[in-house]
Length: 217
Image (cartoon, rainbow, N blue to C red):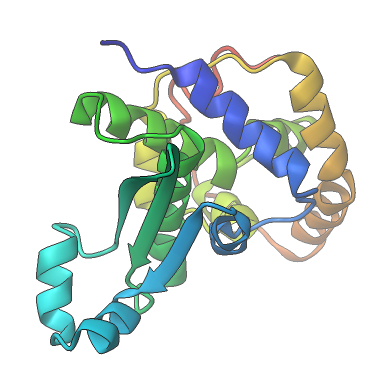
């Protein structure tokens, strides 16, 4: 079974539009909490509610100890419980929660192979946290995107860049990309102006690999 990268990227882009996101870094947590079929709890809250030591909860719920999503059916509808480690560094928590949001938006329920679900939720997460229209707009404004620039712009770190570089290319309808680009227009203008006026950055530009392949605006 082949992952549907296009669907994952499109859904992430549509969610940015739905929530009128106009600045970075993008926070997935409020989006998760606003989904009507999702209950979001921290590992500490789970620990307190079931009477288990927090370390036991970590080992039980998540091999990676960052976040996990469980799906259950109620009256024929898919519902989700997302448990996450609220003590993670911000950028790590953002990626973990973005992946869980990907599971929810793509309606993953365990019926598809693990590798397919992982590929789709990863594609969703990076298209949400590091929107390609934002990256392209900054490039078009004349600012070379180094790791330092990307980190300041989106909170993406070197691990994030490695993940993006390894991503499969995805196609999103140009009209959706244009809408996101318009949402970020003021942010891009202010960010580029600030970076050019106060910062000298001689580091190498980021290699996005296949991430920007298939992008159209």
